Image (cartoon, rainbow, N blue to C red):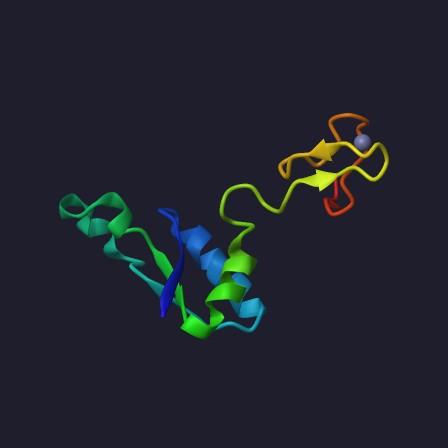
Length: 105
Ligand SMILES: [Zn+2]
C-alpha cells in the first residue's frame, strides 16, 4: 500500500477516493478521525490520507493530479499558437476558450 493523496480537508480526500472508485481502483481512507489528536502530532500527520495498492499507484497518481493544485498541463492555443498556463480557461492572447474547458456557464 502507498499513500497517494492527503489533505486537511476530508471532503477533498473523499472526493479523491470517489475518483479512484469510478476508475475501478480500490482505495483505503486512513486518518479520517485523527484530527482530534492533533495536539501532540505534527499537523500533516493527522490529515486524512488515501492509500492504494502498490500496483495501482501510478494510475492513481495520474487520476489525482487534477486535485494536486493546478489541474492539467499548459496548453497551446490552436487559434493563435500562444502558450497558456493550465489555470487559464481562455487564451490570454486572443481570448479563445480552451477546448477541454467545456464548463457550462
Ligand atoms: Zn489564442
